Image 1 (cartoon, rainbow over the protein chains, first blue to last red):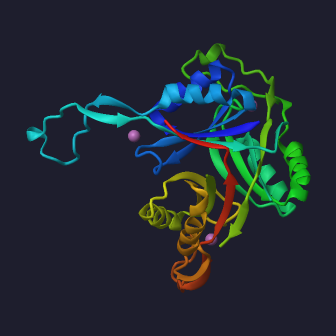
Image 2 (image 1 turned 45 degrees about the horizontal axis):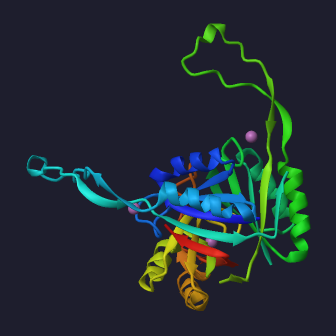
Image 3 (image 1 turned 45 degrees about the vertical axis):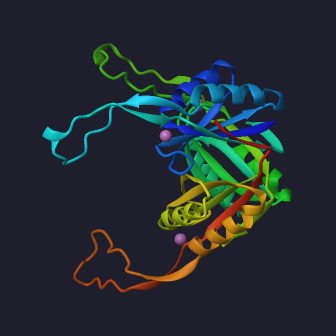
Length: 109
Length: 109
Length: 109
Ligand code: NI
Ligand code: NI
Ligand code: NI
């Protein structure tokens, strides 16, 4: 058994949890902030058999990899709204930092 | 030393933390959601000596195992309150998913 | 690679995260409560190379060790305010509980 800890962006976490669930991986979400990724992020804990680690990693990669996305920037608070023209910008979103931890034992009570 | 990660239901976490504390196990709570258990849940981190792992597991099992419980269902929001008769139902509550992780080193500063 | 889990007091977590960041350690914060430390606390996850563990531990020790501090006690709610003289008291603050975990694999997607 392994414990996979995946730190992903909030916006990717539901999609990723769903995708993992479809393949019978059970996940627990920990709310996390900052550091590995710039925005609000979530740490998913996934317990799985050794021979399922590659499948889990593939799903994590597919659903939370870093990619570029056009986004509408948020209007600055208290700025001069008249002169402010929001213009979509290309930003990096997503990205996953993943640790695979050995475990000595696993129980369900 | 081992690190025990126990994912338990919110409603069991205080009782479990107390029970662990009475036996001098120190716990840290992480707020978690979904996945391993259907309701709001909590992950407890418990650091302990190798020869205390079984005792900790016994306490976790005793205080958070899955069991049946009669509960009054919550009235549906915006439903027809007149026709709604809340009737206790028998549900599965509790349950713990537990990982025992090896640790290389432990420090207290 | 190792995964360092450091449970520190909330008040120390920003300073510690900054100090770790200055040395290129990337951290993820998990909100945690109770147990290892009496007040609100935070668990930091820090992934690092084996030969950087000692440096990380040194930074954690330096920025979150337990120490004494004079604090103004909070006025008791609903107490007799006239007779209450808040008087600084010497309390233990800070403190870190640190686990160094082996990891099988580390990925960034
Ligand atoms: Ni980002
Ligand atoms: Ni449940
Ligand atoms: Ni304290």
